[in-house]
Image (spheres, rainbow, N blue to C red):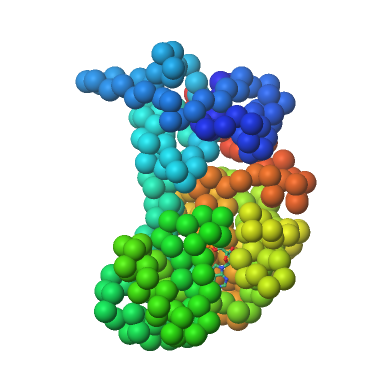
Amino acid sequence: MNFLVLSRNPALYSTQSIVQAGRRRGHYMRVIDHMQCDLIMEKGKLQVVYQGELIDDYQAIIPRIGNTATNYGAAVVRHFEMMGVFSTLDHESLLRARNKISSLQLLAAHGIGIPKTVISNNPYTVSESLDSLGSLPAIIKLENGTHGIGVILADNKKNAESLLETFHKLKQRVLIQEYIKEAKGADIRVLIVNDKITGIMQRQAQPGEFRSNLHRGGNSFVVRLTEEEAVTAKKAARIMGLKVCGVDMLRSSKGPLILEVNASPGLEGIETTTKIDIAGKIIQFCEDNVTKNL
Ligand SMILES: Nc1ncnc2c1ncn2[C@@H]1O[C@H](COP(=O)(O)OP(=O)(O)O)[C@@H](O)[C@H]1O
Ligand SMILES: [Mg+2]
């Protein structure tokens, strides 16, 4: 099969891992930068041109769309989908997953455990918003933060109020969230490929830090899931419509709580921690779907 990996940087671990896994399985693998794709459409005809070259004769795309390129990336993925090319990432699911508010609304509405969250647009009622949350400390999260940047712990009401007032002033929307103390600075990343759990790791924040992101210096190790955690992770991925994703959850006294579902999960941490060939499973997922439809 001929594969396209959509990635801004061919040197990234995840991109390389997918390319190598595909080549090991005998496929033609090519990396193109989605931000450099021209999308051409006219009556009944869609084409992608990359740096002047018509891109055709590919059976599958594996999008690795970063946070800074979500909208154009989704348009490129949609174009390939409409051309009948199999994609490991559905463009609508990508857009949904990148919106923290709509993701949490959707998960909560489907009965998935999440940390209690309050969103407010009113700068004059920050105290009441915190009362709606009902517990302190509070976590305040930028709507579009990543890698743990923009996630703040406010340990008393006065701090939380002044932070919220500041973000209102900056016109920066935030989520106000219940702080899950029992998680003790740890979270669990569950890697899902084609509705199946393919890798699990726990990440532990550095001492004195509550954010367990590996980018924030967290350590990772292999862990086992309870039945409830496994069911919850798979259900969250299904609700989000993501076939390949990283589900992040906290262990709490109320059971598993989903923090977010990542549409372009990094492979370096999970593959090195678990020694599982996740990229190979992603290639296999494409093989199964493309051959099924031939
Ligand atoms: N409500 C919470 N309670 C306790 N810890 C949290 C909470 N929300 C986030 N964290 C910690 O902060 C980290 C980053 O938060 P997250 O919402 O995943 O933002 P990002 O998108 O920047 O990774 C999480 O991995 C977790 O360790
Ligand atoms: Mg996260």
